[in-house]
Image (cartoon, rainbow, N blue to C red; front, side, top):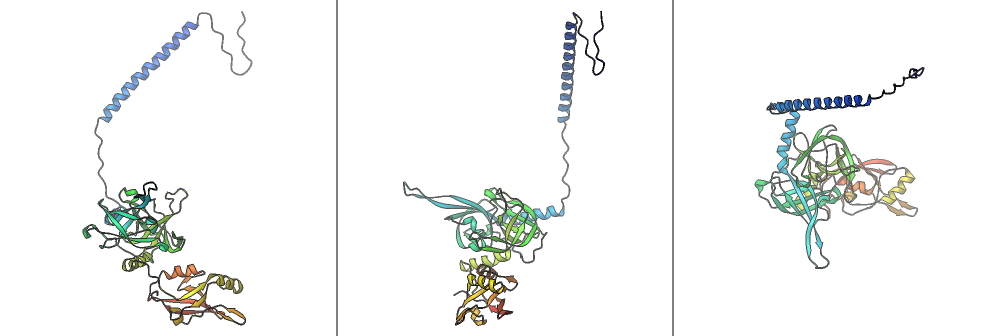
Length: 390
């Protein structure tokens, strides 16, 4: 009988089974599987027993160590400011066209903070925009109906008032924003969705930003931060490491609507000026310069002469501008002679009417400003004392 064929290279073929050997191989396979299963069950039982024995032993509790100074500062700032932050729930009016009945329906939510013991609350204008009323909830969950004292839509600020016991009102500590530095630690507190106050931290990412207000008017000198400002945190305070108010959280840049690390806060120097006027007068009192300006004429002059600024079209009689000797545009036989071109208010460059009036909002009646003007081919400095509006 010849031997089985073996190939000259590669893996050899296995020999065909001999008659009667299949039952033996099957029995051996079954014994192997059964032995493996039995071993696994035994080892599993032993492991479970050991695990149960280990789990039955009590775990040691590691005592809390000393906290870092930054942690202590953060906790103290939250503890100090928490009672000053409020939750604002606005309502609107809805009319049932079938029955004619008008009812209040939830409109939106936001945050705010206590300004003084008289019950004034500061928040963003866009938080209460279009609302017919608002409910303010304090840190102890007591709620009060709020009335609107006044608004500054161009600065996205509003002042409300609640009738609450003075003992419940803890005014926030007010700081300054003109001396902020990029990299400075900041803390944002809000009351999103009425879930109690939350705290996020970060740094000042940039200064001197400009963002549009709800009316499209530019808000200048805005603070950019990377602290998370989530939906519902609008109107809440931005604090420095001393727990002082340095801004009002107002807006974020985010494709998704959630915080993306680019948040903006209205600087407290602007907030202080606006809020004190609203509390005193019920409105923002903007200082009077006493000029009428022309953006169209400014564009023509700029294109022809290459001079940036805003052309004075008319100077009002008995105004601060008239007292300072500013010149208006006049007609002659040869055509139109442009008036003085205002290029700067103090150190702020202005190129449009909107920019000029935005710059004036940083001042109050009685302040003296230095105007850089272009006249007769030369620049000059003219000081003007601003007045109360007529």
